[in-house]
Image (tube, rainbow, N blue to C red):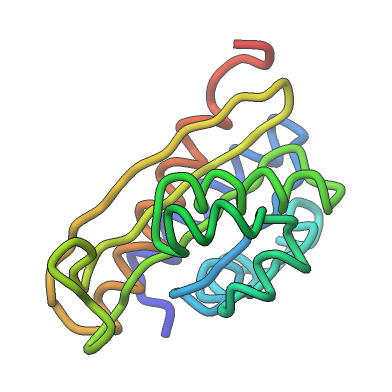
Length: 168
């Protein structure tokens, strides 16, 4: 469910993307499309939003986004490397100028000591090989909260990269 804070941040991002004449795409795993739902809930978002990929399984990450099998085998689905590959894949498989990815463990199960519940990797890729990544450790705060916080972080990272002059 999209809350007021998410909606407000999404509106601000859409305005920035619109002003910069940038198209957006997303690749989501643990958020299951919540980032795109947050953006597309806003009327007029279609002039900025290009497409979204919900790639919950490793097979989907490989087939839809081109995430290398060796990356998934070596680092796992919840990793910096996979998040970056997902973002680059969404960028290259869309008409977008900037793309975000989210992969993590929303819980309540699935966590390990090395990769606990609440661990989320978010990446943003833009033209000219610009990439940023953030590792978030939200903790075991509940599945819905992990997903919401992940979307808020993704919106912030996209805003950061979109606000930088092109070529920087």
